[in-house]
Length: 426
Image 1: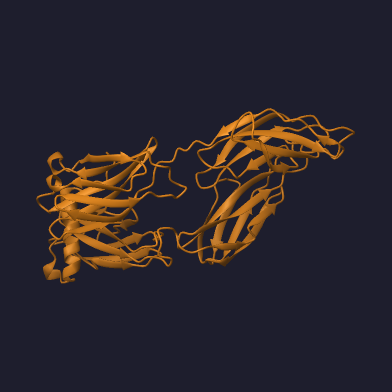
Image 2: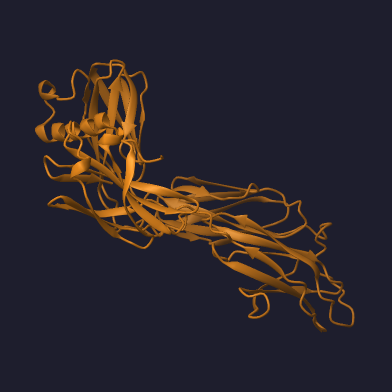
């Protein structure tokens, strides 16, 4: 099972690391054995970074376990180690634990406390403004720039197509490079821009098609004396991603057409409304939502009139996203029961959970996770009896809130130190 493996030895080390951090940094009191590191308690800024750790006794270190998905370790030569933290976009402080091991099986722990970014909410803080927010590039390709007006410094610019490359320099200038358009049709995409706080905005990029263009002759400058015939051969293909979904419509050009009107509905036989126009025999719909099914039709138009509808085509934006990890908001103990509360992530990169469960590391099963509670995907709290799952060596209970759907699941791990009545979670 893909439950985060918190073995009894790792759990013990985590609790020992917490105890060590509360007792100071005196090497003589290091309860983790002959393996000793400095520092063992790290304060990391909200934007993440790399922190150097020195192994003063028991080196070299040969492996590491992380009790936090936002932490990683570069072991280097086993004596000079680098702890790497991702930016904190939760808006709240968080704590993670790293367990180091040497070749003799001795271990010690490092506690990492990361500050929250400004904003103090569960959503990425800060707002980005860029100018311009839309750019048009000729069919020959080229380069253009956009400036960060507010919300900087920005750290990255990402697109999901191969014909656009974007980069950030100095935190305030976004350079967008576009390849020549050899497709014969106009095309569009978006560049997603992020700052160090996790906030995002986008720049719309549209590239013109060449004249004529073989497969996309576009519109006719000499429309004739009557309305054009209805377009034929309309079809749709999906593109984009969970973050920037879109689809591309293409059809056979109509003789005499000067423009095309694009219609869309969520029902096949009725409810069509115009969503855009095009001078070419193609159109990119960037206003779609994952999980919806859309039906499309196109009309041709010139100065003499408008054609009938084209054939109808359909595209289903299937939601194949697995749920994101639950955001643990509290965990409490009363008698023999633990109650945990959480929020369900709403980030568009995650799917909706259809079910959930509490998974607990069972000492009688070698530390493997067992399900002790199940619930619906909209549930945000659960209570379960914990005493039979206390690890005798550490006095700890390890469990997770698991959110699931047909495409997968995500776990959020919680450790309960029964001896000190303390909970640890991200």
